[in-house]
Amino acid sequence: MDDTLSAVSSFQMSPAALLLLNAVLAFMMFGVSLGLRPADFAAVLRRPVAPVTGLIAQFLLLPALTCLATYVLNVRPGLALGMILVSCCPGGTFSNVMTWIGRANVATSVSMTAVSSLAAVVMTPLNFALYGSLNPHTRSLLQEIALPAENMITLVLLVLALPMLVGMVVGARFPGFVRASERYFRTASLLVFLLFVVISFSKHWETALQVAGAVLLLVIAHNALAFWIGDMSSRAMRLPVGDRRAVTMEVGIQNSGLALAILFTFYPSAGEMLVVAGFWGVWHLVAGLALAGIWNYGERKNRTLHSSAAAGVPELQNR
Image (tube, rainbow, N blue to C red):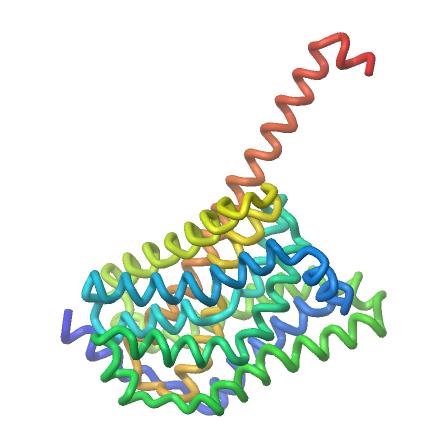
């Protein structure tokens, strides 16, 4: 195990590939933001309970419980720090698509993605430095990495905040373009990101497979924790089912692409952290789609049962 994990430290990415990764992230954020309007942010102020619940779960509970879990379970420092970094990232852009598939409240999901992406400019570097140092197992490794906070903020601005603003401007000025292209942007973003993850790890696929068992188990458990935090937080606030599912999906679908971009940019030799972020990038899509499919199936089944009941009761038919 030690030999295989140390071998992963050879992960590297060329400047061209790194530029492409950041471009892919910016492209994804641009596509999601095409349908955003200032009114969406105003809606958060008018009905803040669901978005605020999601933000607390996203930027407070998930990093804190991740830090605690990695300490209690004595997870290897490199893997633990990778989990902490992923937990400090904002919600992933695909959460909106999966919220739609799961017949949940898409408006809540979109507003949460927008607000969390802006909040990540400050919260991601702050949380990573805080929780990485709170865990004594990861503290020394964090000091070795010494990711410059100002450079992380610049990266998050370029790949999240700026594309969001450009997408909103383009969407407002060219609504016809948005209607014709929005779904294609989502599909293309998903395919391009998955392709990029596969290509980036292809040169080290054998090493990744050697550590897949241990790392994948951590990633699955960590992702399940994220979904659970989102669900429990929204239940505690007694949110409607549609909002609860949107919050659950937003917290469970992390922007692991941002974690990859941070690592490849500032510390490409952090192989264990890269493997965690890379496996997250694939697994959370699998888990999210599965959960959305279960919700979708349940909604369709309930509608069928209600329709059958209404058809079999005369007084319901006469209403």
